[in-house]
Length: 219
Length: 214
Image (cartoon, rainbow over all chains, first blue to last red; front, side, top):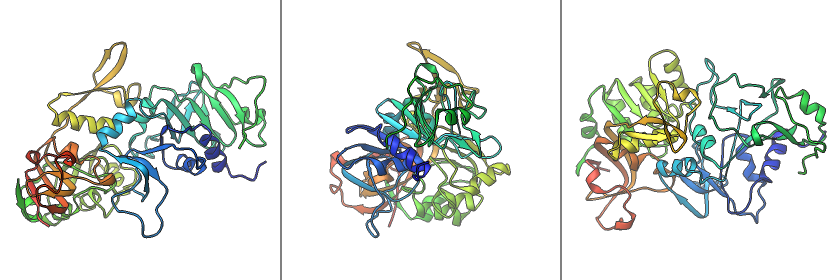
């Protein structure tokens, strides 16, 4: 096994999906880490749905502004060329198909790529925030998640938790695998560092299509 | 536009009022008006806002004081007190996708009965809602929202009531300014007319009823 921790594997692999000029929205948690692995010479526009394109890293001590935060209320910086707007514009960008890629976390993804990521009835009801609009409207939806939760597969035959959208996600990246959902079914594209196809199948409840050659992630 | 003290502005708000409140996790929320609502103990409020911030901040202060009986918001996950009151049945919470919430408010302010959105189709959000097909695609009918009062925080307000905002403090503010009977504004700076150039005015003065003096 690689010594790289699973969150770093996921974030680094997803960063490879981004290209210069893309408008990208990152969710909280592992998705936020993706920004750390975008090459310096690549100009990606990161959107914060509270009304900012051009979101930069956490400010240096004493350089923050109380009215400049990300969607979680944490201080951020704005990069050269950044712009701000109201929430109607922000969600017009999201729902209107102007966001090239969104990277979000997941509680469950099913065999067809349908996602549940916003509530556990009776346990966790935080509200969907922008998740439903992002999954419904972004051009490409990439899920960043640990492959299992407490040893149980998160890629399941059918979601038992409330769905986020009727639109399927495009790609799931975990520490064990890259799985694509083109054509309404799950296909194993890559395995994680030091991970066998067998291990991925064992940790996945949903049926996976396995191509003849499944390369390991190049990180 | 009239100028008022925070106390006089809040005195206009009755118990049981429906309030749209600007801000995103407390950024762009009129804290002085919130503090005055708490001081005057205005209760049984319906709050329409993106979120309820965190305890001790912004709308979180109204929740802490037990003044809110109903919330329409997209996210309450960072305020454990809101969740506690919701679970205890002290506060009704309607959770609305963020893009749908802001469009329902926009519709209310723009003279529309509602909007058609694909967001929520095939999820529990569609329960009890009318669905329509337009050009072969399914949309939910999401109805317009109005409020008695919009509580706004701007960066600049000029003497005539024109407003501008900065950074990520704009969020819901200019949209709720359109959707309420009465608009009450706090501003970081109250400045002479002309300092906000006409092209940089975001909320036009005729939408503003009261500016709270600094």
